Length: 198
Image 1 (spheres, rainbow, N blue to C red):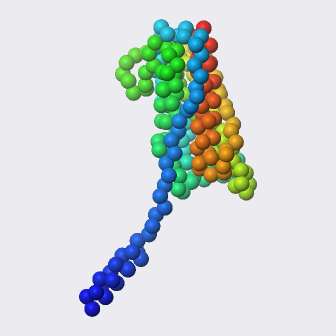
Image 2: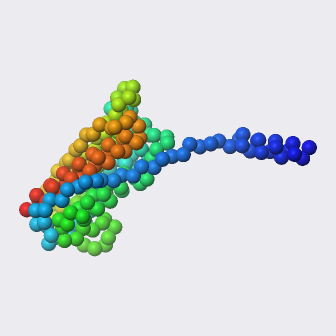
Image 3: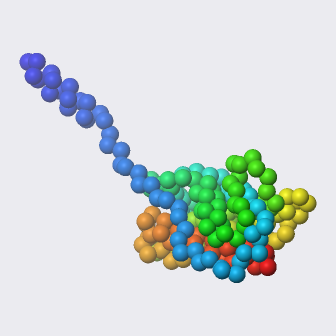
């Protein structure tokens, strides 16, 4: 009789528990940024990279996608490892620092003063699907403004965009395409910053 109650308890325990599907996390990374060897005329100035501005949807780890250009959904078993606005800000900081265009490149969290600040607004960073969810593409659009902190004047501003076809119509294909599009946008930004300094 005791064995019967043990078996019954185990069956009730496993019967009531639900198996939650695991969530895969994807990283936002930029690759293959080419350094412009002539872009070093700003090497006497320090630059602070501000945290990127964005819509509230990009301040969440949810991996969103758009259907029919107007319906927004989130993947149930996929999410970003960090919020897109924070991850993209870190990538911008990393890439500008590696290019050695400026004397110093500082993060937004530092208390140190700088000569210039780069403000960023992420206009678009999402995967788009067609009607039957068989194909998808991504759009990345980021606006940059370089500001002189002594005068608060905007020295220059520009917007860079990239559209990439996803290799597969799912979260994997979307994350890969978004990283590729981001890399293109950041490469354009590096070239632009280098030209401003000349």
